[in-house]
Image (cartoon, rainbow, N blue to C red):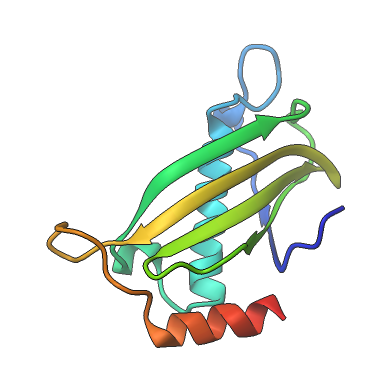
Length: 132
């Protein structure tokens, strides 16, 4: 498995399951969002609700279905830091086996929604120290 600097467990809810008995493909994006929220809380000490980050890119490569009774974890890392962007790479795992890989880019937006703003120095420090 690739080296990811952060990992969190995700609860599979009954509503996540489709008529075929596995996690619906659209729910994978929700799992990524839940993992980002945990990361922001655990590493940056802030809730996503308190920030003005916006998702500007999302790519998911599905490898296998996630069954209803499997334990799901999302492992990821901030792959690089831009001026205002946070590119993240992910691995969604079911019972320890890779079920999907993904990549997102978050951008820190101005509070008024007009353009982007630089990532705060404290965030950079925390991200860098967590990646080591």
